[in-house]
Image (cartoon, rainbow, N blue to C red; front, side):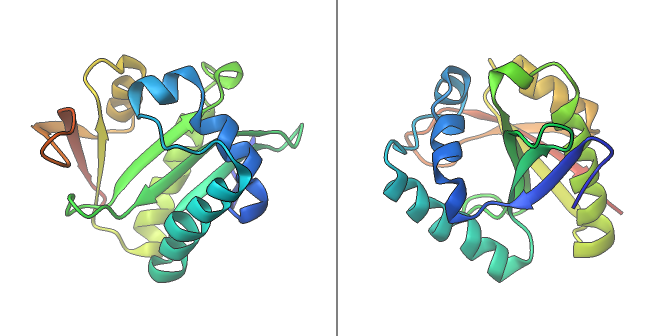
Length: 167
């Protein structure tokens, strides 16, 4: 899949080193949490168990954001099925050096259009911690509306829950 500036390709085991870099940036650790991905074998297993399995089961999942011009892997974006959320949610992360250039907005706009036209999703949600203002701003720019605060597990931090109709 592609936009004017980006390629979106499904995560594969060969992206393990990139996933480790992406999921261990200071902002990811602060706002999303430590996924304990520090070795390539762990990242490969995570990609297989969480990303590839959902892609095979649902037809959608997590994609690497790649700059068309340079070929550099810049971030990740996806629509996820989560146990504790009824509506599939969009999530994204970007390496710090690529922030502020509209790449995630471009990728997310494309992904939401694809979710509506090719996957048939009727709604999409997004979750983020309240203190992540950059994520909240992007979620709102994409047209998602804050509905409530939720917890995914009893001991989890409270999250802001947004939704958008794709109909």
